[in-house]
Image 1: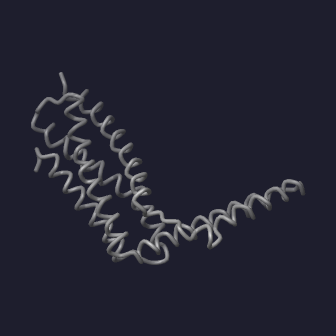
Image 2: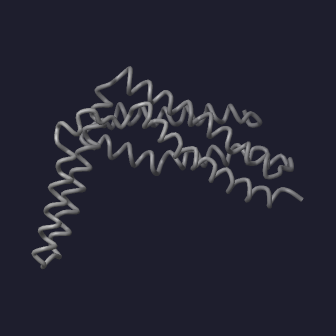
Image 3: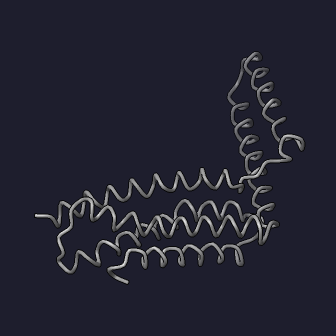
Length: 192
């Protein structure tokens, strides 16, 4: 498995699914969306960085010289394999196995957006003294509130195939940036 980048990719997939289902079974509560967001923003990138590092370090410690391209491949391929399998599994699970979890996440996403809008409105209202500015703020706030009406949010699905494609595109950008960083760093310290 040390030399096999695809084995590292499957290990990343396993770790991601362990975290996903751990959050699903033990963290599904009123903060499910927020906790999932935090996990995806902070914990999963660390897991993928560790996987990429392990993939490169396992070859580096054997003294095998690697150029930019080799290191890039050793970091990108496992992250791609782990990432694509994870995204596909999550999409299938949320859209076909437990649609109630998807509905809960969508609901909590919209509620979070409403809360953030209300907080911004209250903060902006405090510092205003000019009546014209207050009127403009109130008008903008009311217009924005209309986007949360039942008619406007009826078909909103943050976990559709299209949205997952956007998410994976953002993840791919992270993989490329991380792979370039690793390739630049390890190439300079290994290659003679």
